[in-house]
Amino acid sequence: MSSPTSPVSTTADDVADRTGGARLAVRSLRKVYSGRGEPVEAIADLTFEIRPGELVCVVGPSGAGKTTLLRCMAGLMPATSGELVLGESAITGPPQGMAVVLQEYGRSLFPWMTVAQNVELPLKEKGVGRSRRTELVRETLAAVGLGDVAGSYPWQLSGGMQQRVAIARAVAYEPQVLLMDEPFAAVDAQTRFELEDLVRTLWKRLGITVVFVTHDIDEAIYLGERVLVLSARPTVVLEDVAVGLGAERDQLETRGDAEFARLRTHVYELVQQAKKGVRSLAEAHLTHPAAVGVEPGGASGPPRVR
Amino acid sequence: MSGMVKALRSVLQPVLLAVGLPVVILAVWWVLTAGSTSYFNPPLRTIVGVFGDTWFSSPFGESRIAVDVVPSVLRLLSGYAVALVVGVTLGVAIGSSRVLRAYAEPVLEFFRAIPPPVMVPILMLFLGIGDTMKIVVIATGCLWPILLNTVEGVRGLDPVLRDTARAYRLGRVATVRHLVLRGASPQIVTGARQALSIGIILMVISEMFAAKDGLGFSIVQFQRSFAIPEMWSGVILLGVVGVLLSLVFRAVTNAVLGWYLGYRQSQHGGA
Image (cartoon, rainbow over all chains, first blue to last red):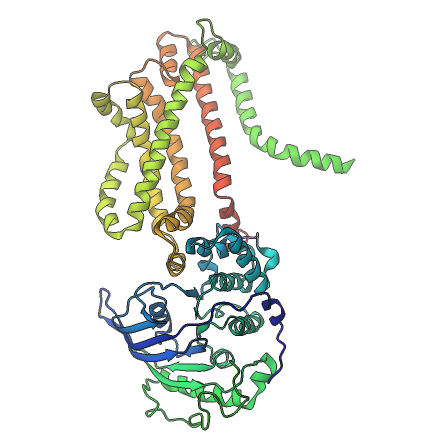
């Protein structure tokens, strides 16, 4: 459980610790889509806070407004009411210091640019000098294990590699907050494990705040320090589950851990209840009740290293 | 030995494929007209015979290539360039704005439906018969396919790419340059290709109405003075100019759309 080595950590060493994270607060967020037909309430009332440098996963049944939430946090979509705050300032448009990795890796990379150009473009716009840009592109591509394909086009790469490019682009941007929207939903299971470890490794090195939206319960628990379980739409937070699995995660050991299994059962039940329309923990009928004795900071599992 | 044959074949095969059919057509034309005594349909041998003299000799100081062909092509290129700049600029604006599109689209469809040659007599009234009129005729004819295809291309941009550009706070200029123009470039090129053939047609037509020089003007002059082989040689030259222009066009396209071919293949599984 405290195995210090993971396959990617050696390459990720190239990326120096630099930015640190920022606080991300969501208060009474409500989102109603008012198109031509009946207005649809996607998010009823969401309030939570993500501390600087925390890795939080968001799970919920499909159609739970996870993507809506992420798009609001990314400033790509205005909230109907409520407040989103990054650091000290309210989010009104795409904020500075935030990078986004989307699920559709194949469509989020510019097909007319090489891998290196894709990573470099946001840096150019940010006003990063040429030599620093070159350095950032080289070292982030190396960190995601793509140092040798910098001159290729994205469509020449496999799905997993394309998503690595998207991650490299986000990391090179040196964000304080990294938002990821089901980024591994479309890659095969083995690549997925590698990419999960890559995210953990980069997160630990950079100390940035990461919000990771997924529909995969195992992935959420494996990656997160906390897991926010959402209800079906209109969305509220069902439970904020602390994951006491320690700082070091390992695909074999962590997933075989008793605590992992307990959390998995618990979150799975919650999501099943959410699908049936349960909108608060009190309403839920759990055969494997709440995470007893696990407070944030974790009584079981080793103390968290920050 | 067989390696050399193979190498030779790999060089010759595309050349043979490209020139094979034209050679056959010319040969058939040559044979069918060899014994022709028709005044209006002279033997191809006669046409080829006068070709060099008609266009390249310079009894009065300058050859017809310099006096007639170069001005024609310059007018074509000027009108085409104006159409490209205006068409792409307007197309990006209209394609990016739903409101603008709703207002503009019916009007655009109407203008596109007007056959460009009918503009010649109208524009003659306003602009006379000089170069300006001809360039404007070519530009207004070439504009529509470029404009409408650009609108389509810009409208069809992947929303995920647009979101990505916004999330990374790309400015307006960078978004147009790196996202909109590049993303719409396959459609822009399609429009530009259609516009080029329209441009060549209008180049000739605008010179047939009223002109003092030009390729179309020369062909009409030859016809009126019963210099029939010379007239035919002008038609052939027109074809050659068209082929040369499309070769240049293809070279530019390959440079701009190099990525697109591979991208499309990767999307359709190598089809």
